[in-house]
Every structure is written in structure tokens, then in C-alpha cells.
Image (cartoon, rainbow, N blue to C red; front, side, top):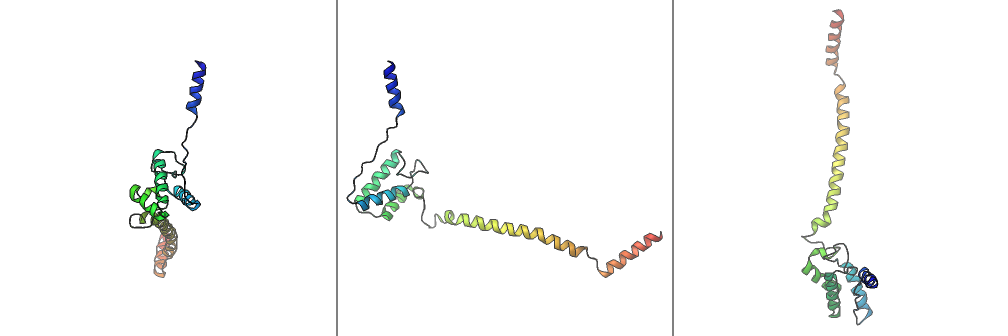
Length: 156
């Protein structure tokens, strides 16, 4: 009984991963497959490409890429097919178009906005200092009035 439990525990603890045994007509097709599977993101795993993922959807996607490569589709056709089916999320670098312009230009816009805010804030801090210096200076007429007031106060 003890041996059976040990064997069951050993079998349960080992990871049994399916290894893809995909065959290609040429080595160029194999390289194309490797490049594509590293560029396409697994819809389930999110931050893992389909080459590294063992999720069932990733296995299906690898098989689909393999089929399309054997049919003679190029990388752009395969990527377009996957984007059409799974959306822009399936690629790490989505194309620049009307639906993804915010994704591409957003960080630059935020950096530019931050730069403008820093400039305006720095300028506001400098500006009051120069105004107070000029405001503290009295005109000749104000100096005369001040002297008159002070002299009257000394007489009292």
C-alpha cells in the first residue's frame, strides 16, 4: 500500500507536457514558425507567447500557425488572420491605425503634458519673486508721502 501511494505521488508531481512534433518542408518554414510563435501572445496566459505557453489555446494557435505556414502564407498573412480572430491583444506590437493610435501616442502625449506642467510651475514660482521686488520699490511721490507721515509722527 505504501509503495502505491509513493508511486501515485511521484506520478502526480511530475509535469507531463506535450511536445509539439510538427514537421516542415523546409528549414525556412521552421524558422518562420519559430518567429511567429514568439511574436504571438497567448490569449489565456496574457504575457506569454504561444511558443512558451502550454495552455490548450496556445497549442491550437501553434497548430494553426503550422497549418498556415505549410499552406504558403507569409508572416503578415498569419498575423492578420490571428488579429482578425483574436484582436490586437494577440500581437505584442499592434499596427498603428485608428484603433491603436492612443496606445502608440499616449505615452508621448503624457510626457509632453508633464513637461509643460513642469515649465508652467517653474515659471510661476519665478514670476512672483520678480514682481514683489518691483512692487516693493516706492515711487518718488510715495517716498515723499512716507517721509511726511514719519516726520509728523516724530513731532507728536
